[in-house]
Length: 351
Ligand code: ADP
Ligand code: DP6
Ligand code: CO
Image (tube, rainbow, N blue to C red):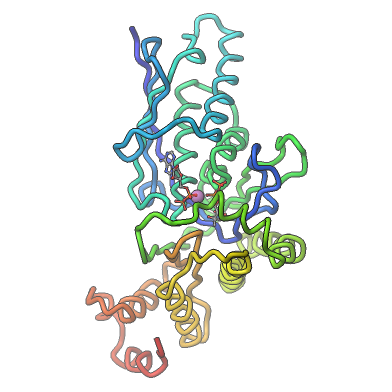
């Protein structure tokens, strides 16, 4: 009996304008539009292999080597949507094997910490949906497939595209216009780089899904954010990306990270994703930008303590010399930095 199999990778995307809040939990529709940058394929990524055969007796998922429950409503919704699309194909072409009726075996591996605030659900569900869509030979566009990934995890819809991506919240009740679209390709602004500072690889105690529902239910500041802050910022950030304006992009990114974490703190009881080390990184970035009298780095924190820094490639040495100096790692970067600048840094730096 034939076994059909396909593998796909999906990269992590890190939001620069955060999705936080659902207006419809079942369809996973957000309370605001969001923007992200997708990391390179060979960076932080999920690798998912899927197999299907008439002989498989049940759907099964192995995540990072461990058998996981496939009962969650969101995974079931993704599988159902994909099977429905496949079933339509099969109805129109009787030579296709009837895979829509067969069970799936899914093996997935993340090459970075899972559930630690580094967007594992984004890469994870994007890879899962993309792999099955390929296995089923579905002709749908990336935006159409992104709507299915969205039901698995909201942030996953953005990982179906590379480069700079927007998730348009949409206004339809059935979610048919809540999808990811490309803002600009990676090659539009190719010198943008991301550095991940892993503060803790531990699994977070408040998963994103429950954290955001708690914020929507209890934070007043959250209402202000979605009504008066995010809509304007969404347009400004798209503009900053389109015109490759790093200073604006960076300020909007940092402000949005702070705004999102402020709504977490304003939830009741509060949610703490950032820790002391995270806050030291925030301070360090502002000091670096002040030292150079130019914005060379932006920080952003997802729902966890780990930092993602965005910077332009030409500033890598300038930035990393400071980062390694601050964390006292003898990495070789400091040798690329002049003694005079390092001395000035020591003077300015009140870590
Ligand atoms: P993160 O900040 O890492 O995205 P979340 O709380 O949003 O954390 O989601 C973590 C959950 O996403 C995991 O507990 C798991 O259920 C799911 N997940 C992570 N990686 C994968 C994957 N490769 N395949 C399927 N599901 C995944
Ligand atoms: C802070 O996409 O993980 O990373 O839709 O419930 O799975 P679910 O939530 P998820 O939330 C991501 C929150 C964030 C910001 C973002 O990625 O936009
Ligand atoms: Co997530």
